Amino acid sequence: MFSTIRSNEKIGLIYQLVKRDVSSRYRGSILGGSWLFISPLLMLSLYSFAFAGILKARWPGAEDMGGIGYAINLFAGLMIFNFFSEVASRSVSVVISNANLVKKVVFPLEVFAFVNVISALIQLIFSIFILIIAIYIYQGTVHLTVLLFPLLLFVFSPFLLGISWFFSSIGVYLRDLGQLISVLLNIALFFSPIFYPLSALPKYLQDLQFLNPLSFIIEENRKILIHGNSMDWIGIFYYFIGSCIFSVFGYFWFQRVRKGFSDVL
Image (cartoon, rainbow, N blue to C red; front, top):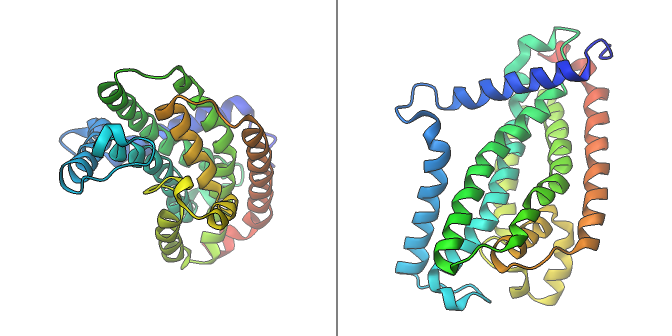
């Protein structure tokens, strides 16, 4: 059924849908797309003021940077979590909100997963740009390991595609999934090494963190952006394999249950 739609046509369709999605978010606002830059800048400024100016917090291993070091490490973890959170939360309603396209037999509904991930990725790119500027200001240099960041995204993205396919298909049949995902994301926020480094946890909790798919990516992100360390290449390899397996699972699950979408919608 989907063989009639060629790959280049799907790419063009994804591009148009991403363009529509991003522009619709800021339609009618005075500053428009400038919020892609302003939003992460305000977030980092707020964290710097709160943790450097008020709480005097210190990040283990970055004590010499004071509260600014805490804010930067927090932001580096939070931007990965926000990337995941946006994909997961928006996936729940993506099929429902495009119900008019479900009944079009030749429309490749699976492309919405790519639209979700790419739209969230655009915001992440602006966040990383702000973070790199902050690192340069407070450290006086930017490590060459920052060039490994695209590889980290490449490893992480298949997992996000799987999440999008899986949640978007279940969201059609289980309308309470959106509320459930909100609760689970709040839990994940505090059980991921965002407000603290993984090394600050007791050994038995560090060992359990491998069950959290966000922990490894967050820690590797800090290593290459802030600390200038190389990646855990063995860990990256195994994570990519697991990420691809989950992506394939999510895709085939989506294709299997999509047959009933039109009946439910």
